[in-house]
Length: 462
Image (cartoon, rainbow, N blue to C red; front, side, top):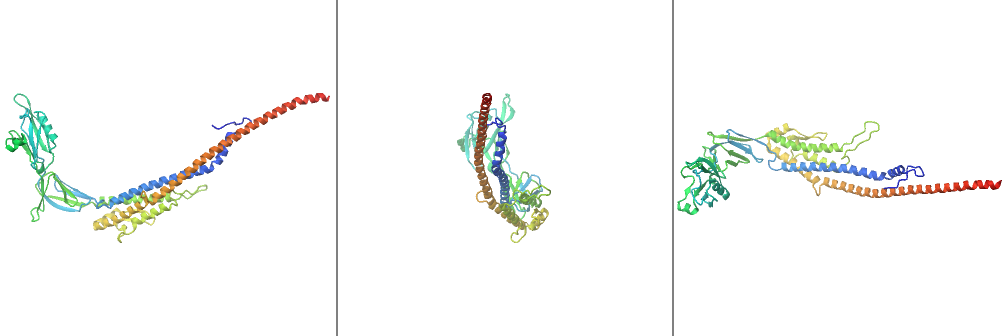
């Protein structure tokens, strides 16, 4: 704590005097602090601008992927037949005939109170002829089901209640189902070990008395160009025909009696919106730069001009020009305005969705080519300015941050000097009070001595 002797001898308010003197001494330090704060605001806005530019660049790069922003509508003339289109799809209309839907192989065993074999050994066999022998931990149908499931052989099993026998004991059946649909999922389960299967003495669970094959594993099957010399049969174990046409998947879950017409058409409205969203984001970025570069001119007495956070920043100004050029310059001699991308005389970027849709309907390949050219240039601008190592905007932020760090160092040195100056002033005023106190004491002493001498001198004179 500083020494405070306010008014002890002199009657001066030394605390206020020191504060006033320190306020004057701190002016350079406060100017540095104000400049540091202003730089911090600039850095924050530059960082935010850089993040937005990086986001635009990322989306522009994604738009360069083939069909990335393409949108399609799909149709099917029958329920149970669904069509999906990927980004690389082409418009198509075709007729298919569904001959079969995919099925999982499923078997239900005879009803048992307990497994008829001890130990309960079974042989599992898949459609490829591969075999696995398993033995359950007990003769209960539940444990047999657990053993089948634990084998991981592509067969799932569960014990299902099947009433009770004549003695009142509960009966269970095993419901066995292939893990995968299609002909390759077909299986056989025998009571007995592999040797008994080879010897022909095992019992097939599906043919035992009271058992049944519920469904036989089968692939879905369709025909293209049915009834013509070009007829083509196509099968799918899952029921989904991937890339039946370029980028088009068809899933069959029902068997209509009549041929099914499927279609994929370009959704110009949705595609226009997808492209328009990217242009709108670029336009928003340009507007943000414009707003940050605008100075507020005084309109009344006493008002001052207020500069925008980007006013006079040559890097931001160059970025604005580069982005504007990227979206308005021709691509292979074709102006982006022909597909609805335009910049007016005020530099405002806009997207005309109706004009884009008309151009898309007339020449989709040209629209894709022009938009890809614009997107590529925008991506290049983003890399030039926002690359984390060599970006021009990144370098600008780094430079501003170095200035802030330098100002911080100067402020720290000023804080030390000001603390020393304050301590000096406090000591000076404290010493002043001490000296005044001494002088006051001396004055009182001399006064008292003079007062004591005066009567004596008067007496001797008479």
